[in-house]
Image (cartoon, rainbow, N blue to C red; front, side, top):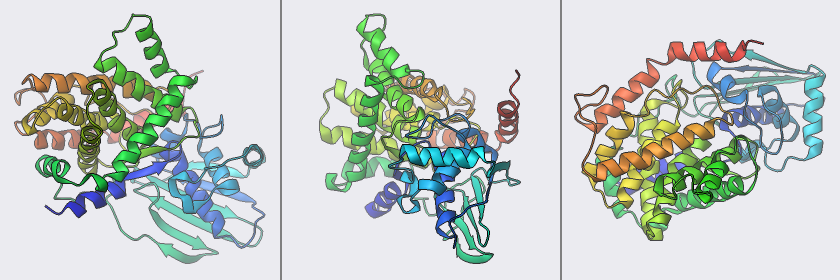
Length: 427
């Protein structure tokens, strides 16, 4: 086993992100396009985005603002974005920046269109000035630049290609349950700095969500009901409160960054905090919690490499599966129990739909966190959903393949219906 391969994967997929990654990717494309203009007086901005990007930018707050939507995201990227900061492109927004972006939109300078593409993650930003133009295409991954044009001249093209669903399986064939299990037991602790950082960042935004009133206040409400004795102060509710609070804050515009996993901040949160919450309650050592969180992150990455960046299915079901594996490890389970935890999760929450990024995502994160703890506890007691049931196979790896098949092949029509509903809400 080459430990460097695993560390490289963690480095590629654990990325610090400020705000929901779809509108942030739009802002990134806008900022990069602005960099390639010869003039500063912008007359028109056109954005073409795939349906999955549109639905995930429609209702989620942009960090540091009370605004949402593709138009506002691209305007802020143009006005104040720093493309060199990647997914932290909008760090340090000022009230003046927001006012300038709002002015651009009020003047009708920004138009947004549904892109004619089969790619699930596709963003094209075109900017015009009186004497120059720039075009940027971001595709497949949130900061993967496929094309930069300035005045019709190609400045940059993509460094690598992925599938239309954003799969990253090629070059990651070494990832499986057995190799991940071996890695997390043998890797040196000093090599898991990114995993430790994911715990620190995601705990900080969780504290923000518990202390302040964001969105639906899912985490804060659970915590309040624990204090009143209505909910028991057990492993599951404690994990639900911490994890949902982080999602509450992130989806409602907190200016704190998170550690994302496979292009999603909520996946990073829900792969990290359930494990940390259980570890705290079990009084696990810092090393145990970090290794368990590394297991969670890597199982999430393993599944997402097959599943793709975006889907009509909720990504928290995948990161919740990773978290259940990490919790199983903390409870003293071995590889067999980890496989049972995966079977329990996939037989339970598979099918949860993604209807865009929004405050309500915190409830889905809470649901998947509860399932993660329950699935781990059942696995520890030797219970796993059998291969005779539903999509579950004898080998957990094949159950994962079935999940990915549903997410990739089965979600195409669902995606269209969901976007149509979101764009045509009844009065």
